[in-house]
Structures are given as structure tokens and as C-alpha cells.
Amino acid sequence: MLTWRTTAVATLAVALVAGCSSSTAPRAGTSGAPTTAAADPKSERGDEAALDTVPWDQVGPGWMLATWTLHPYMPGGTPSTGESANTTLYLVDPSGDRYPITTFPPRADGFGGPRLVDWSGDGERALFYDQSADKPTPIIVDLHTGAQTAVPIRGSTQFVPSFTLPSGKALLIVNKDDNSDKPPTMERVDLTGRPELLYPTDKLSSPIRGYYLPTPDGTQLILGTDAEMVVMDNDGTVARTMPTPRGVTWCTPVRWWGGQSATTLLAFCGSNNNDQPQLWLMPFAGGTPTALTAPHPSGAAFDAWHVQAGTFVGTESQCGEVLLEKLNADGTSSRVAVPGTKPERSIEVVGVSDDDLIVRAFPSCNPGEALLDYDPAANTSTLLLGGTVNGGSVTDALLYPGQG
Image (tube, rainbow, N blue to C red; front, side, top):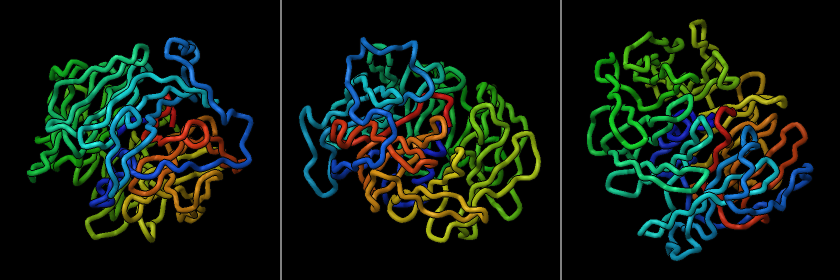
């Protein structure tokens, strides 16, 4: 994924850093743009063309969805109003050419529009989440027409919805009452909001933590609980549990390690002893888990990606600062400087395209600046959206479904 196949990546930052925006949430801030250095042959200019010119037969791995706004809201400043504050959804090809799909107006308070949170497995629809309303609302966008359809269901401000796998014919919703100590609940609804299944999470031995990962065929879910990970069939039947590693109190699934066909889970695990959480590799069929990362001295490693140039981890420290680091042999990690980004900028990995990392640069606790293709083997980067391509701010991005 994240392709975006789990809510864990979307919301782990909320659990790690209280009182600050998640790294995956739109941030408010300047629209200053990083410049790229020593770019590869991909285009840094990027042409913009109409929706009806999209070569749909070519859309697939390497393509991206990204949200962009010209004038984002700045903390402590005056909210933007008018057309310049609109949020545009772009379909972006691997070379940086872009196609505007649809536009969202700013919220009534001037903040940015709804968040881009998922892309259906069949590639046909995007899922947005409007958390500004009294009842947070999913919005489905038809990528061929740009049509927006709000799904009339009760949502949660703590967890984002996702499409079901493999094709995205329904939605998975986690709900948590902000004013209650009750654990989250989970349900599946169809694309019109009609309930299909309320998962019997209240029957589990421990409350769910709200993070989940579907199997690629959509027949099972791996749920993180306060004691273990539970494998639940599509009808709500508990198939089995996955015990936590020794010394660990809880685990939540992050992604399939090695892609959608992999048989190993990347899990984010911690204890109740104020220890720093770690990333673990856990065989789905059973077997001995292996710690991927050592405890981080100043934050927590919440996600990881493996490419030919090595294994890279995303870590989060105080107030939403997200760092890209490379894993060392002993499980520690060292910060990576992405060419074309400023040293003080946070770097969020969107996913893996071939052996490149698609990253989003942004000031901490602020909206994104630019979307870049980073080649770690050559240590070069290519600007795809924002910055000198078209200015403004890239607030969210997703890779075509099925990519890491």
C-alpha cells in the first residue's frame, strides 16, 4: 500500500503524537516549493490536460492520485477564501503529466477540503473523507467523470474509511465516539451507505485498536487489538489469532511486506511500559516474528519500504515531524536527505514505484509542498507536482492500487 490498504498508516501518527496534525492529514502552511537537483530523465515540467484526454488503457502501476491547492491555510493566519483555495484532485502519470479530475471548495472555516484516503482496487474510484461536518462523511469520486457522491453514514473523526478489497465494492468503517471510553466498532457498508455487516468486535477477548489490514482477496481482515492480532473472516467469524512477539503487549498491522502477494505482515508493535514501539515482520501463516527496527531514540518507526537500494523507514517525532531514514544492519536507522527538499522539511513516503520512492515534502504540522519521485540508488529526485511545476501545495497522494 498504503497503496492505501490499511488505516494504520493513516492514523498511527495520531496515536504517536498527541495534539498535532497527523503526518497523513492535510497541513496548513506556506506554499514555498522545493527545487529538485540532478533529476533523472523524467519530466519536471509536467503538462496539464483535460479529463477527457486521459489514456485510461495506460493507467496502472506508476500512476498517482494527488490533491493540490494553490493557497493553503496557514496556522495563525487568515483562512483562504474563493476559487484559489479550492482543492483539486489530479491524476498524475509517472512522468508528471497531470489531469484534473474534480474540485472541492474550502470548508466554511477556510481550511482545506476533504482528505484523499483510498483508491479502489479496480482503479475506478477515489475515496475522500470530510471530517469537518458534525457527522464525518465519506465521498466517492468517479475518476472517469469526476462525479462526487457523499455516502450518508455516521463516521468518526479518529479513523478514516477504506474501500474493501479486491475491487472496492464496499466500504470499511471504524467508529469511535470522541466523548466515550467505549472501544471502536467496525462495520462494512455498500457504496450507498447500506449496512452489510457489523463486525462482532465486542465478542473478542480484547477491544480493537481501530487499525486493520485486509487480505488481498478481501476474504479476511487482520485486526489489531489490545492483546493480539485477530484474523477475522469476511462474515465476522474469528479464524484465529496471531500472538504478539515476546515482550510486546499489542500489535497493529501496517502492510503486506513485499507487496499484495506477500505472505508476511509488517506490524507496528509496542508495550504498556512506555517503551518505544518497533516494526516487526510476522509470517501470516505462523512462525517466529522478526524485529525489523530497533527502538528509536527520539520517536517511533511507523512504516517501512524495501527497494533495491535498501530498506527505508518512516519515523515520527514531536509535533508531526516525519523523517525518512534508511535502515542499518543493527536495526537502527539514519536520516536520509532527499535531493530537492529543504533539510527542515518532513518527508512522507507515499509508496514504491519500481525501485523509486514516491514522497511528499511538507513543513511539519502544515500542508504538503510537493510530490517527488526519489531514486535512492542514484540519490536523485524528480519533481512531479507542486513546486516549480505548478506551485501551490500537494496535500495528499496515493499510488495506483497494489503498489507498496
